[in-house]
Length: 302
Image (cartoon, rainbow, N blue to C red):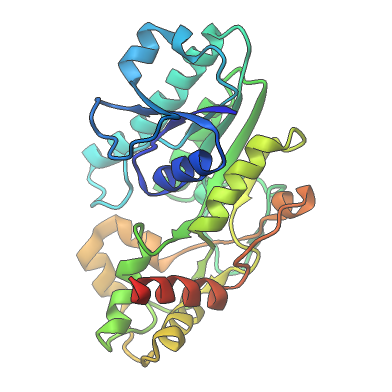
């Protein structure tokens, strides 16, 4: 399979590129400027966004495009930052739409989205049949993001609603585990807020599953089947590290430190991967205890 990946130098994108190459696929990574790729492989090529906009014919023969591009949300949400977060996602989806429109043979497109599509709640449970709700900045972004994805004239479109992705080599998990390593781990805020999560290995496997299976289309929650509360998540980390879970971080302090972005830590949603399970996908790390033990053991071994 020939696959183009935007955001291929990021945490999820990098893991996906490696997984594609390991199984023998040809991969084109799309970057803002050349020279960002550190990986070298005979089946790996690099193109810039500008090159593909000027010459979309370079993508002829491509079977699939995975669009993971977007400005990080892990920054203080000034108005300028909010504009960048939204604009980067819309612009990326619009660019992919332009490429696909110019291609003779339309590819499969997996376009990233976010679990924030459902809004925030401590009591509700969501799957792909649940309606979207705009309750905050991120849910508003995700609504526009998916509307932009729907304009991509793909042969088959998958909107992958990404949750907290846990990995040993990137993402938020190493920082989330750090307080426990220092013996100051504990719940954040009330501890009742839901965390929908997935192991990085399962995330890459799910993207491959979406690429390979023609019956998979539309929204897919990229989440493990057992979401947990913030308190339960912390207890799993504490148990794996044999550290105490005792030092609560008050909500007001998180808001003081992070401003509006504190919503990522203080609120959440319980999202289930109904569509993936119904399509036949199986998780290697379905529970938080299995995932955390594997990741922390990997970090220790390194």
